[in-house]
Image (cartoon, rainbow, N blue to C red; front, side, top):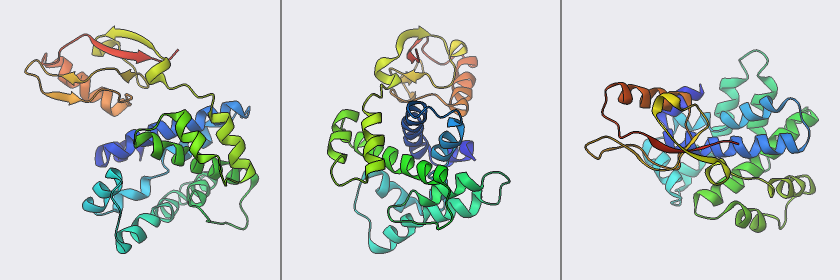
Length: 231
């Protein structure tokens, strides 16, 4: 499902990666040993957006105000995701986390873990939206601390210690064959004729890495490439 989202909506996949990083940081900070559950919820939190009209999709990513019909369609994406994921065995809690990520959404029988996961998604989403608009994590967190529930305020304070791989990772020059998923491209990846294959500042996923490998094998890429390697 994650790879489908990568192919259909690469912009949303990139934003989900940032949310995943935030959520994993929160899970570790809370001492959770089951961080994979929250990570998976963040990874698939916008899978319901694949059904949106392309124009709505582009306007939403650009931060352009949506009309009433578009807003309603976008607001339903957590419900769409829940319908998809709740049918998968052992995904019930993850599906509920995604459903509850909407402000004001409620499930009467939600467990404490599901409620925590939904709060993580809301906090990660709100911070990510402001970072995507140009703010730093610190600026986004500072702006979001007013009028938040106590549990989300604690999560925001915990997120203040987050350091992105894009700034904190070890800078190296590598050939594509030496790269792994989760590294972050420092510069644009270009062909020898100057065509940008993948823009800089993008975190590598396995499907994206496989695409670069195909270009590299064809001998058309400028290598080595500068990347940030997680410490």
